[in-house]
Image (cartoon, rainbow, N blue to C red; front, side, top):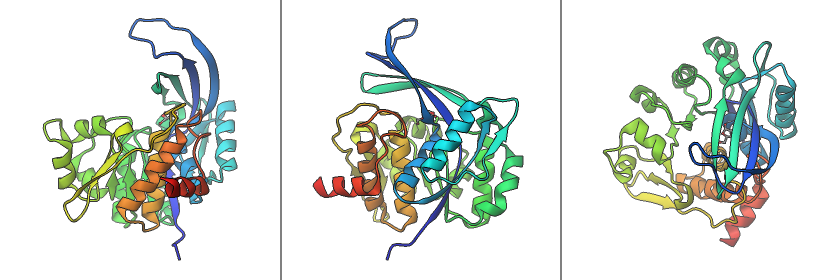
Length: 300
Ligand code: RIB
């Protein structure tokens, strides 16, 4: 029987302000948008929601402002079954905001950190005992980087597996790379961390079953412990909105990996979940259930 896994996410919580446009404006250009929507987002909250929708027991750690957006984001997490008990509600600073333009089957995102920028070492000191009760911790780069590294050091000292999704792109010190269980950059983020002079295949071979590189519509690659480089192709999807697809992939991968799936099976599952998520609008509203993923896996 499959093991039950408890997963913690330490990361960002945003309100996404999404503008639908026929195309993404060029530098200096003005274009018309057809609609504007406010939806739940933030890479941390998205990954937590993805896992909860797939049936995991998940708790979200982070901060929101003491404002309407913060209250809505907490409500949404609860509605998705994500634990919110330790989320800080801060006075005098707004909830994180992402300004997203969706068009041409792609997007651009500008984030305003707000309360996410206050997820500091002091906050982490207050949740350390709680973190020790989790089987895995999942992190991204939308809270201060020194906090991300502090959590990783703590998890490493306490034998807690960590998945780091280094998005948005920022350098990761090699001693931190050594301490994570899996690192899941896209090609651009991998270039920033490891340099652009080494081809992706060679890089994957250096970190078997630890480095997972996502390549958008091309799929996702890793190197198996046997030395074979494995690419799981992306699912063919009717794309409506790609926002949150990477978060769905990371959440689904973290969950299946924590449950003991082989890296191949976990990536196949995660890719299918991400492929389903792009067929609906919104970072979280398109995230599939476990049944939907299972059905899609059978039919492909
Ligand atoms: O990965 C997508 C997310 O990035 C959006 O939900 C937005 O909030 C930004 O954090």
